Length: 532
Image (cartoon, rainbow, N blue to C red; front, side, top):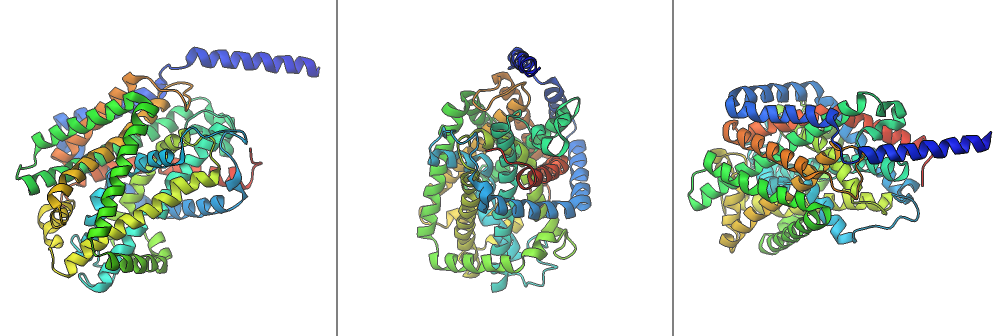
């Protein structure tokens, strides 16, 4: 009997392999078409009736964050706790792909792709602007905190809050989502998808029927909206710089030219594939980051930045639980909903599909190495970045070297960067370099995500194979159109409100899937038998 069963298993295995070969490279219609119709439909709606698209996005933004802000906060703390335990326990010794698996990329290349794959334009956009906005209480962020705007304590608060929003908590979301994808794919031999990460909770039945299409479609929608939001914010930022520095008024034509430039850049990179496009662009981008950061450390008030960074970290740790579980009742909507919860929605929108990308480049690494590269090092990099950029901006504001508060108040939430750069030694050189960095930052994030969207829209995708180029081009074009429409026609009090609405919608779309991923991770690593 055992011989018969063994023969049956071999036959079933051969039939499964043959079936997979027959479907390899074919479009997953249940994922591609619903996601594409919604994203493409949104782009068309924006072209023909941008006011309606803005209204729909705004209503969704406000409703989602007011209704589920408490859940966003709980999920963020839970993700951090799981990541800490996994990293520093025996689970961290497990190698992705098995004990004999060998990494494909050297450490520096791996870190460059991991860092730039998710960083997009965020650090450049808000490294100066966010601390100054808090410090000056520009949009009412400090009204309910008890901290006086413009005071020394306000500078410490601004730095601490920036660290809270941009370091260990958000990167824990990325890292955990990537880890569950990598572990299920490399060690438990499941499909390269978001759906497979829920098998520990629901069993194989979650991979049958309509569920895979629903789960992966929501994640594709979230990342498409998140990318459109990042690109839109980048357009607004570069456009404001061109206007402020070169006197060319920003408007639809400037934004259209920038959209075409950025979209062509990340599309070509995605079409080149992981080895010839994404890897090279990431390496260039991260080196530019290093150079800019080093120069500002040297040129800025280094001692003040170091002291403010240190005390800012202490202030964050002192307020860890209050900030971590406040959904707006304590800090107020201007601070919590428009900044922290928006940030969490943005990170969660990216997490599942960025997790797929992080998994594909992490074969052969241990779980601890995975967490060092995707959680610890990016968080430390963000602390140094905000400590340097934000610290310099806060010092100048207090010493009346330049009035960044007035600049942002009069010109929008992303305008302070260019005034800041103009006051640096060699500012005329810094400004075009930073503009180039912004374009590269978005391109290196978008090319990896467009590739990942195409992977999820293709049957039987593998981490070491490229998805169809025509899918990459369609998704890239759709994302570019939505971003242009939202930034051109959906500005608000902060100048980028329209794209913020999109990001929050993306995060809300996958909030519950991400919550299930966290529960799945708990069961997978702490209850089930581990696969080495």
